[in-house]
Length: 362
Image 1 (cartoon, one colour):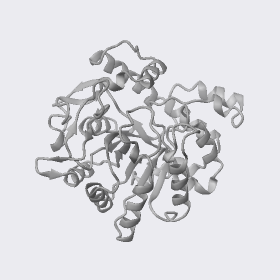
Image 2 (cartoon, one colour; image 1 turned 90 degrees about the vertical axis):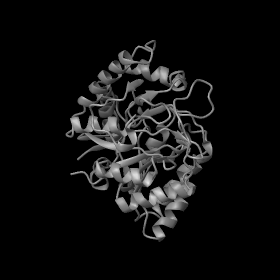
Image 3 (spheres, rainbow, N blue to C red; image 1 turned 30 degrees about the vertical axis):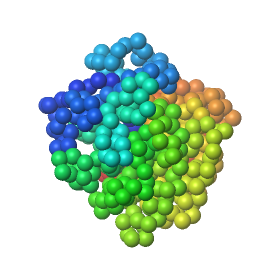
């Protein structure tokens, strides 16, 4: 079974849908911006990256947030997600809001705002999408470890999400403000191990959402926490998104090197993995080529697309022949394009198929 472990869901202003089953902690959707099941913040909509993504997706960049824009986003998603014959499942990712160090949630960020949420997608909305198409989608949940609600801590909410069939939990520490060593983070990771639910955690560079806490870019502190949890028998399965690569080749690669050393050394036989999502995108193509030439590491890599990040083909002209690149370019789905490019680069079959056993998908 071929599973894309990293596929984003984001709508500009989707109001709470009372007709779908709702998690107890999402009765009114977002905490920081109540009444929404998904939003794209004004700060995000003004980012240059979002302008170009909308252009590439064929979505009118002049459309304001609301139902018309969301209808276009959903139509484009359906086109990309329905025309991927080589892909069996997509893990659709919810995304929790920013929490400060005291656990206070901050909702949609305005342009120029220092801290806040650029993106929110409720677990309830994603669960409804997955239940409507269980043959195509899997629930990727998101709960901030600092979150408390109605006397419940994040661990309590995790139990509810796991019981509903979530196959992993997504974090983006540099945007959401998640310190690896924080006791709430460690407690959440320990609970994830006990509940047997993997974590998908983004380390390294970021180009789509605001980089609000670059002090959390390096995976080193998380590896130290995992080292401790492993010693006590409570290490969860962790997938490090994008192999902790920097956004551009001239930036520090220390986080990437640290992770590669861990995957091939100390954590070689531990449930630590990395996904190769977004590595066919602007700024990261060098790393995709390098990792293709490391076959001994492929059993520690999982395929992901990071949709809706577009796929670049021209940087691979020396590795992939013209006819193959033209064939891939003709595919209508970016997800399928991403898969076929990585196969053409020589990634072993295990990169595309081993997620099923890691995520316990039958």
